[in-house]
Length: 434
Image 1 (tube, helix red, strand yellow):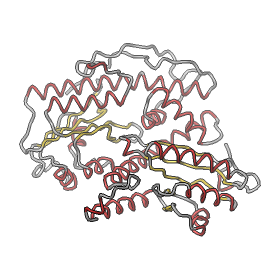
Image 2 (tube, one colour; image 1 turned 90 degrees about the vertical axis):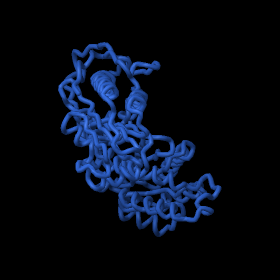
Image 3 (cartoon, one colour; image 1 turned 120 degrees about the vertical axis):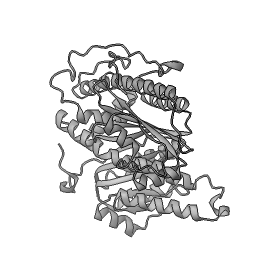
Image 4 (cartoon, one colour; image 1 turned 135 degrees about the vertical axis):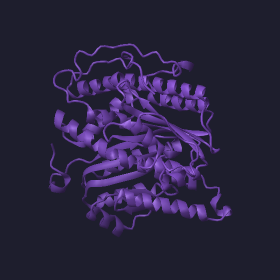
């Protein structure tokens, strides 16, 4: 494993590595986080500038907001500053380049160079707070200024979505780091960039979200032999009563997750709702899909607050939890009540998604605008069947598609790559209880 950047000698700089991660969500919610490590020597400045320029061009083309994490970067030579200056100069008219967690030497050099188009923040949290304040200031502007016809000027809505997406990325980053460290130790990789590249390749090949893949790497038992999961056999997709309609492919997580919420909203005749799944690496509910929820409420969910929520109660109790009157129910905390009322929700119901062993793997929540609303017996039964379908599909996905991805990762890093079939399936998880 290479010497840490902080101990590297100037005469033998480590090559710069740029790891790019795209935050999941709608296009307007995405941000491109560029995690950089190594030494920025004068000799490699030109190549580094070209590589960084490529990442930034991709971000601009795809409507992403670039954020540079330079916590593990050493700065060397005026040539690097000139390269960074040229990079930012070509971005004139674009949103400022955000640099976070830069070392003191890097911060001082960039500050003294007075580079236009660069905004330095000590931490990512500080950057998020500033973006939030900027969003608030934008909201307070007169209407004739807020609606300026500038396609490159981020709107208040875009800033709110950017802050929310970056908060979600902050929560995921430690798990990604843990997975990178495990892979580096297990397979003797020289740096975290190589580990991240392997994870990203497998994530794209099997269409498994990076967050889900790294969580599986962290919690799965370590491989002990040529195969990570020896003796595993492909088994059929479980019979799904509601989720198998419309030609949905159970291998594609996003398609199925959105289908769960779509079916729930239709069955419950709800105007809004969301689905959160349990991330086993952090043992917490993570927002997966939502519809009709106000930004303030989504911010509340992304922060991961569970205390005083119906979601947490349903997960703990293992049964549906109804709140017929959000304004008066004692189950909710004052913070949860405030954001729910702000989103227009006056009644709600949270339905846990339980495995055959009774473990909660997610919570589905529906919101209604009128107090006193409760689903009738037939709709409650239909929502229970949907929760059973969701549990069976999640179990199959985790023990089939996700294990296929982990197996391929193991083969890739041990040099024994085969061509696994991503359509590998497994047996029905069994029944579920309501």
